[in-house]
Amino acid sequence: MIEVKNITKSFGERKVLDNISFCADKDNLTTIVGPNGMGKTTILNIICGLLLPDQGEVNFVDCDLKRDLFAVLSGDKNLYHKNTVEENIYFVAALRNIGKKQTRENIETMQKSFPLYSEVKHKLFEQLSFGQKRLMTIFAALVSEAQILTLDEPTEGLDLAHRKELTQLMLSLKKTKTIIVISHDSKFVSDISDRILFLNDGKIVQEKQRLTEEQFLEIYNKIYEQEDKNENHI
Image (cartoon, rainbow, N blue to C red; front, side):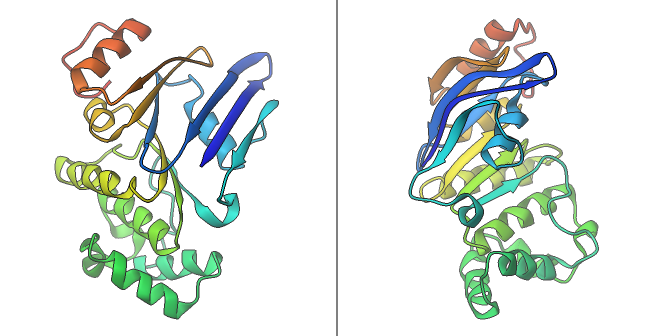
């Protein structure tokens, strides 16, 4: 479990996060939403240890930051572009002190949920489509035995097929992994989220459980004064 307790963070005179607190645990996927510039990525960076808060703390209960957490960043720069997918997988596993034999066994186990791997493992990472890069990054996280996943805009640039595949994957993984997601994709958020945190002016202004897409959009538009309720993406 991850405990985020009273996190405050400022950049210069601008307070980006103001006394943020929440917990994330297995089988309770947490999504953080809000317009750009609200501090969502800053929260993930603090959880991942990439930034230090001005006040507050992040506690990892029955897990370890360095051993168990894998961050899937926004964009397509999560793995090395000039290495093959297979090389990337073994490299990421080695960084976590997982030997080649165990890595092979993990690949065989996880490949049932990632049939794409056998198709692309000998390709350079840069040759993959955006959606393939996303899925193979998550595959690398699972092969390297990550217990905590943070994902920043995971459906960004995905076609419908890959987004559906990612949705099913999140629903399966959240049963055994602790997952925190940032997303603007209203359908994806409503499909996968057990808890949704609405961030505004550096504070969590609402927390909701398991919303339909229509309910999510209604709350989102009310908080952020958005008028177009017919868009699938905000």
